[in-house]
Amino acid sequence: MNKIFFFMAAVVLFSCNNETKQQTELPGEFKYTSYHLNNSRDSFGLSLNHYLQIAKDGNYRLLLRNDNGQAGYYYGFIGFENIAVLDDFIADSSILVTDTVSKTSGETIFRLDYTTGKGEKEIKFSSATEPERVKTVRAILDSIIASPGKKQSSHFNIDGYLKKIIAEDSVGSKE
Image 1: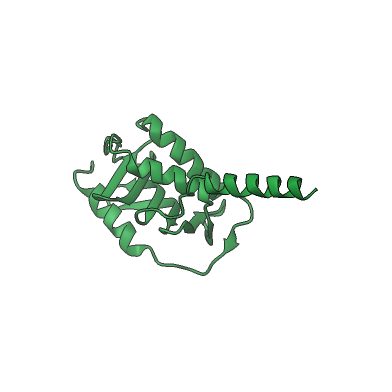
Image 2: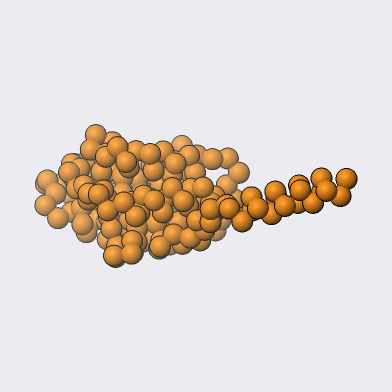
């Protein structure tokens, strides 16, 4: 009986030593934003659908509009498997920055802002211009946003980030 126990313990210890190291951290903050531009003769602004900010350690903050247009604030953890997927996505230098979205009202614009080992990167796209590699990551991020069990959070301020988006998108906009 002791030989069987020793054999089982050896197998367990051996298998633990051969496991690959689990990815537990991103190289920097990751942001995923969805919005519509409001472009009229009188003003230029945006209507935010959602804002997901993921910290290096995988904890997230989420601002999400409900059906009534009111903002809900949430927080949680994306999971180690999603950290690994995002880390692989960030490491892929073949993903080009896409800025072929229309600056007219009505089109949903998606934006990914993240930090790589070489600096900051931005990918902006509509569903019509979305690269295939981005579709996979966006599906994961959308599932995090739609997942039940999010913890309610207090208000957090993203005004500076939104002003940056408005300033970038207002350049060369149709009037």
